[in-house]
Amino acid sequence: MAKKVWGMYFSGTGTTKKMVTYIAKELANKIGAEYTPFDFTLPAARAEAKVYEEDDIVVLGTPVIAGRVPNLLLKYLDTVAGNGAYGIPVVLYGNRNFDDALIELRNIMEKDGFHTIAGGAFVGEHSFSTTLGKGRPDDEDMTVAAELVCRIVEKIESGNINEDPIAVKGENPIRPYYTPRDRNGNGIDIRKVKPKTDESKCVKCGFCAKNCPLGSINPEDVTQITGVCMKCCKCIKLCPKGAKYIDDEGYLYHKSELEEMYGGRRAEDEIFY
Image 1 (cartoon, rainbow, N blue to C red):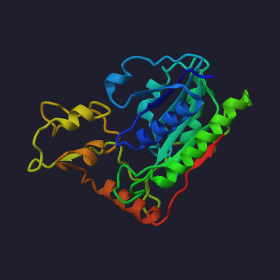
Image 2: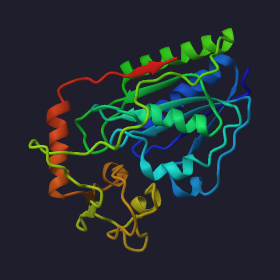
Image 3: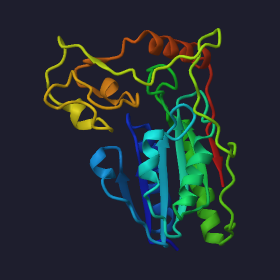
Image 4: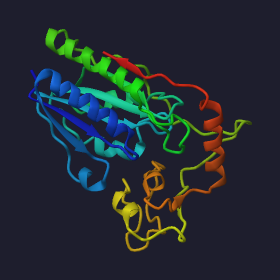
């Protein structure tokens, strides 16, 4: 039986953290193991490779960006060493689709030396929006997560664990990243879009610079984005003064299209065990 259950996550606005933490804590409680979190959202946490032991269980979660594991995390994830630990990949998507993100994360974990035994794709409020997947993961989502935990416990206690990686939804080879398009099928490129600062609201508290997952905001002048922006929208959604925003025409069009196309439905969580 495992001695420690890890909740390892990258979470811009907190949805992935909520789900991974719940699953890992509940699992640890049910099997009588120690729970330990590992938040690799900020650059300092990714400065050194993470190494696990064979008797660990690792619930690893990332958000879904463009239907995939965020490409800016791939280099770091390749340095993680599983050493035979059980792995549970978890992805959070914004009510559209998780496409190949879960199978990609599973493949990464297997390559890193984990033995994946379960996994799940859950809905979280979209990083771009306050209406798309609003308030999720909610109580219904946590009920699905609780079901996953129960299935994992049954699997571990029975010893009925397949030698193959857990089978999840997705394609191999992994498909290209989802490309935003307008209604005429023309691509919308938002890769270089960056947040702006409303200086009438900004009090220069430095929250955004300290909490940017890529360390891309200049702490000496928070109006300057000096590095890459992954559009996690942490600085926009969590700024205590609401001073960050994006006004790029293509970004706003894509956001409105997503809300119109997918806002009227409740996308479902999917679990695999």
